[in-house]
Structure formats: C-alpha cells, structure tokens
Image (cartoon, rainbow, N blue to C red; front, side, top):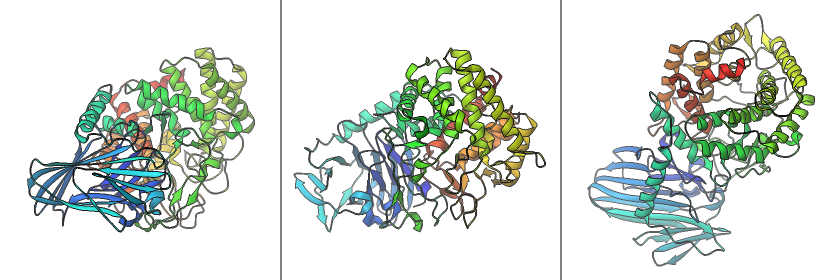
Length: 599
C-alpha cells in the first residue's frame, strides 16, 4: 500500500492505520509511543496485521469518514458482491478497543478474517487462550482479547475464519488490549459503541467555528489533530507512525510519535481560532509542565506525558517501508541544541495570553529563566529547526526565533504587566535583529540564507514575516520568497533545503520530498506580501494532494506523485488550518500577525 492508501482511526490515546485493502497494518497500544502490535506497514503480514476483506480480487474500493467523525466506512466490491467495513475506536474507557463491523451490501460475499498479532514491533508471537467466544492473545505484559459472535480458529499463531456475509448482515469484531496480569475488561457492545462514538465526534465537531470557503478541509484537519492528541496529558504527537521514509528506500526515517515544542505556536493558533479553547488550554499546560526545569536542559521534543527520556535505537528485524531502513524507535534529536525552540515557547505562551489567558506566575518563572539562559547563549551555533545531524551552524532562522523570544518578552511586560528587565530585553531584541539582517542576508542575491555567510537557502525563512520579524512586503522578504521559489520549489511545492547523496547538507545521505508545511508557509507569506491570488491558487493545489479521506503526510514526492514521510502529519494539518483561516480573512490570520509586529 502507498502511504496515501491508509486512513486513521483513534481514541485520543492511540490510533490505528487501516489500508484500502481492509488491513490494519499499524497500531500501538495502549498509547501512541507504545510498541506496535501490528507492524505490517514497516514489513510484511507476518509482522502483525488484521485483515477483514472479501476473498479474492477487489474490483472496487471506496471509503469515507462518516460525517464529521473518525468512523471509517470502506466499501469493498468483489465478484461475489459488496460489503461495507465500519472501523472505529470508541473513546477510551478502561482500555483501548478497535471495533470492526462487516455489513452486507449486495450479494453473498465470503469475507476473510485474518488476525496476526505480533507484539514488540513484530517480534513476539503470543500464546492463545479461548474463553467462550473470546480469544486471548498473551505475551509478557501485553494481552489482546478478540470478541465476536462467530467462532474463530487459531493456527500457527494466526487467528482466521472465512465468513459468508449477505445483505443486511452485520458481523462485529472487537479487539481490546489490557495488561496481561490484570483481569480482562468486558468487550464493549459494538453497536452501542458505534452510536456513542458517532455522538461524541458530532458533539465535538459542533464546537468548531471555522467558516467557508475551506470549512470542510479545515474541520477534517482539526478532527485529525484531536485524534493525534494524548487526552490524559494534552500533548499532541507529530504523527502516529515511525520510520515512514522521507525518501523511498533511503535512511531518512524518523520516529514522530512524540511532542515537539516547535509545533506549539501554530497548533495553539489553529485550536484557539477554531473554537477549541479546552484543547488549546490542555496543550499550553502540557507545554509548561514539559519545559519546567533548568533552561539549559530544555528539549525540543518530549514523550506524550512530558517525559524526557526518548532514546533512539533501531529495530533490525523489520525490513522497513518499501525497504527503507533503518526502522528507528525513539529520536536522537532529543539531545540536540535548537535555539529556535525558545522563541517558539515564548511565542506560544504569548498567543495564549493574546487569546485571553492571564499571566501564569509559574509559567512566567519558567519563561524568565529561559530568557536569562538565552541571553548568554544565543550567539552559539545549533542544529536548528530541521534537526540536522551535522556540525552545528549559525542558522539564520534560529536567530530569527531568538529575536521572537525577546520580542514576546517585551510585549509580555508592556501589554500584560509581567515583571522583567524591559530595557535590557529591548536592547537584545534590537541587537539580534541587526545581526540577522547583517549576517543572514545575502545582499547580492537579495535573500536571507540558511546560515550566516553561506549561500544555501532554507524554507523556514518564509516565517520571517509570519513571526513579525519584518513586514510581509519588505524587499528583503519579497526577495527571499522569490529566491525560494526559484531554487527550492519543485512542481509548485517547497523543499526545506537542498539535500545530497553524500550528506554534506545536513549529515544525512539521500534526498527527500517536498515539505508540505513549508508550502503552506509560502501561501501565508504570499498573502502577507499582498499576492492573494497566487496564495489561493497554491493553497488549492495543496488541498488536491490530500488523500481520499482528507489526510496529509509530512512530505510529497513530486516525481513519483505520492506521499512520503510519517502519516498523518500534525504539522501539515496545522498549517492547512492556519492557511485556510488566513485566506478566509478570519481573525487570527495575517492581520493579527501585522498587529503583533506593529504593537
């Protein structure tokens, strides 16, 4: 399956990816960053999957989400007729459940059910125990219970059965996880769970304040963000997957099942200006808890609960998606120094205050400590927003975000009465601004560059007007837009920067696709530059890249015309929501960004 052939279901604790073929090929339980029990997406069926599909060749497949929910309906047609498979995860009660209901639509269709459970990323075969119509699969501390009104058999570690489905039949299957040393929870009634899940999502989506002309796309993206939220903590994972390659067959394979600080500002904007204040507040509180501690130990990413230990290792027994190895678990970027995150932290909390959140004394103490540390260390080189695995550099965007940190600190003092050394922060803000304009701008080419004194370009510099560092129509901004369009745009879409086979650009060999969030940033930069028609045309090209159920990956390969990178990607959907709002002229768009700069 191509990456775009998958759809997402979830319960705001974890999720599952389901292919058009009817196979659940990826699921981690009990939460996003837990080991997977289905890993076929990064290997083969023997690494774990759950197939429910008509026997034989599929003639036609169509699917959709039911209304504004995360209930997936897939119609599969074979030579014998047609069935509809309804997939969903009820909102979490005691344990995670994945429910699949096979509904007969036309004809008498033999449906193959094949459940291959392999714990710990496909490496552990469980032993099975039958209890009436419930089958228990147990290994270590993991247990999954499959409940169904039909009897299922087990052979060679695989649960299987062929079921004949006729029009009007509804055959349910429920898979429930629990700790093996605890009593198994009761399996939910599938039809009641379906009704409850539909009601919950409809009530949640009714809070959305997004408007036409891009309401459908923005609302589906908001539903996706909700699905990628770990409800107990409020943390938002970058994606529910690991090691989906940025370049097919390459080594640019990363684990995104964690929470990144740099997502904070854009996520808060997307939630706050779409009517989801509770989610925005939970994300802000997660942010403050996660970063509490010594400023020099601030991390760029954390576990879903805010945990700091996210060590990286490789899983050698999985061959990787389309042979893209290694498969990585954890993320070594957690140990990098990325100065831009201090700016993103300050900006996120500024956005929250601008939306009405009062100054929080504890949060401001954390911010103040970070600013003190940044004051002494902002001149240092770093690995930057793209988490390069090469020698640290004097990265222009990192310095822009240092400016942003002190700018938001100044505003916190002036607008909200927060205590702090106002004049000193003003002077630092001015000094950083001067340094960026002097050392990070190539006067001959008329563009900001990736690093001081180096010619390479970087799409993150499209954010220069968006964070208010310069006006959108400033000649230096316009020149940067044009340089990026000349040198980093492929088929209309934006690369982050140039890569190469020997890894000189970033310490990693190989190439990658175009980065969808960067292309949305180009939309926003064009709006701020007064080029609305160009922005709208580009935005609508981006919308056309969404798969059949409205999801986006991290990147897109314009040569092979397919998604690459982890999926679905929160950053891509956040960028879509904000660009849709900017184009519609809603509050919180470019006008607010201009006001932020002018104030």
